[in-house]
Image (cartoon, rainbow, N blue to C red):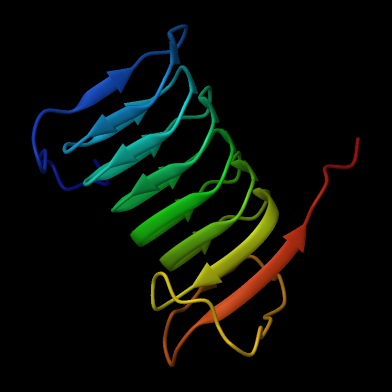
Length: 148
């Protein structure tokens, strides 16, 4: 996953398009989701959420690439990449965050120093692109809607 060419932390779990899982999904290895998961998703490794994927619950992973839809909060301990087709309805906490133009996020975003919310409640403007974790934490609150 993420172009490394190797499976880290064990066997990869795949939820294919057309498959619906109800209940929590917990793995020490990588998870790839193209289908639907109604329940928390937690992995100690990488998570790939494909364009056709829908997740309704909280998500926790070491690294994640999201191209589908997540309705729930996300905790990503290292790097989170949101593709242009990503739709997130919930709060995001990540060490590093990359957002492609076109992605939709409706929630609070905390980037840097994973797990620590800034005492000052500082904000950075939504501009798309890479939100660096250098020099401390950044908080981004945003609500975007697609115009139809």
